[in-house]
Length: 96
Image 1: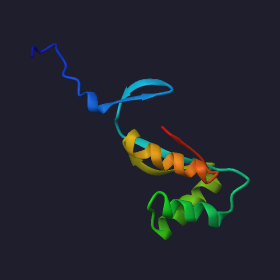
Image 2: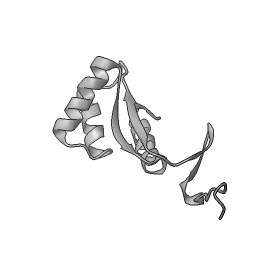
Image 3: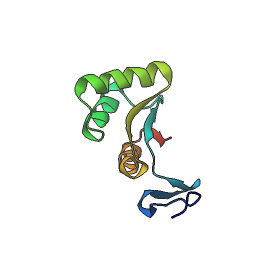
Image 4: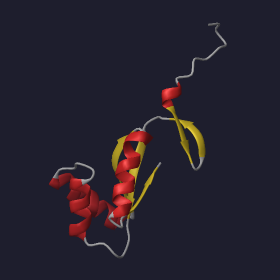
């Protein structure tokens, strides 16, 4: 391989609605709504995202007070099933 060539690891490529990107560190963000209770959000963060009770409470307060909170970091491929599970529980979530 020459100095100008770049090796591409196809395992790191991710195809999303926005296009093709490398699977780099992303954040799972939960967005505030006026529907879900604190208890429901806390329970979802604990059971789906694996947060401790203390961290889930802290994140839920941030979601409520700041409008959103990054609750987990990781690759897109790792976060996608968590986002989908949160959406199934009627929470608003996105990966950025």
